[in-house]
Length: 209
Image (cartoon, rainbow, N blue to C red; front, side):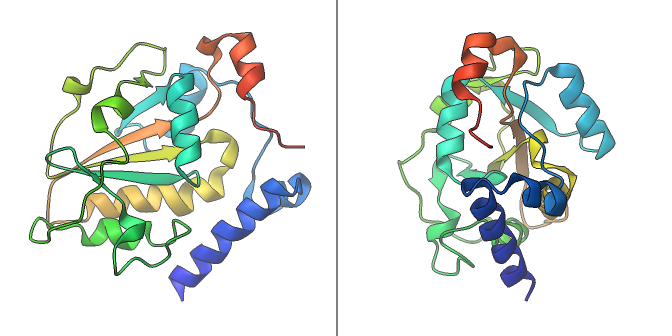
């Protein structure tokens, strides 16, 4: 039942965004119009949700496009200890191949005793090379702590508190409560970044009416 509800929530949020029903979306989920964020505004949001202890990053514009095109936001991208990409939605026991409703269950069940099918669709070093600190500094792939699994978890401030709590906070807790393996979590913000500059912000601003 919980998985069906989350799936419906995901579909509804996507539908309302694509159809321009911004007023309805704002009332239900607390979504606001996207604006450029900075280190202070992002840190304040994470402090509010007690998520400032995670490894937190933003991206450059290339990383922004890659991860926005990857799927829903919030979303997770999973790599094994050899940095191979695991498409959790393609697994035989996936809860939903088209939405992130099964992400929490998947993270709770991650286990080194299981062999996961991997894909070359996404390269870890390439993805990480586009990560930035909140103040715009480049992140080196070698600086990322390696574990049994690495979970890159996307989020946006403009998505509102409800979606952040229902997805990112719950997913993060699922990782922390998983005693079957060691997992590195990279919280990656996909808001527009002030350090991109005005032209890039204008170019990549989501078209929400």
